[in-house]
Image (cartoon, rainbow, N blue to C red; front, side):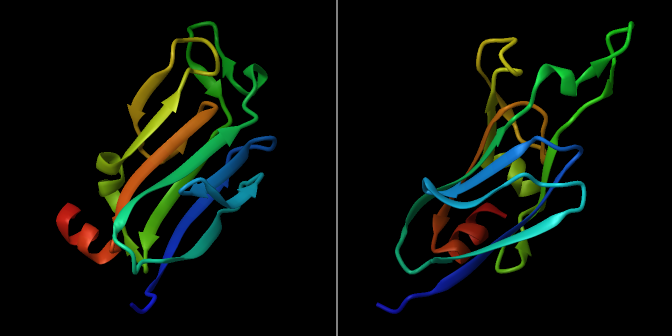
Length: 145
């Protein structure tokens, strides 16, 4: 069987320093950095020739209580977060499909029990986003778009 390569790409930016993002595909780290305010496009090639299920994980670390400023009315006036946008396979954007194939797991930075939420592209708490997909990617895209 021949190897078919697929390009995974996504854009990462942070609203301030100190936040670290570790991105893994099936537990193998493909990107580990402290994103800045300027968006960075990350690309990774992987083998699409074997049928199977996969997990793309975005793991945010480094958020501290002092990164969030709250006014007297209880409204957040300043915060640090990481945005992950433009997730695509071979330049085919997943767009709103991301909300149906991913979950954001966190505990509100140790202030609540663990929660699982829909991921809308922004990580504001230390935790992980799991995006589940299958190969061959083009078949998975057809079935899920």
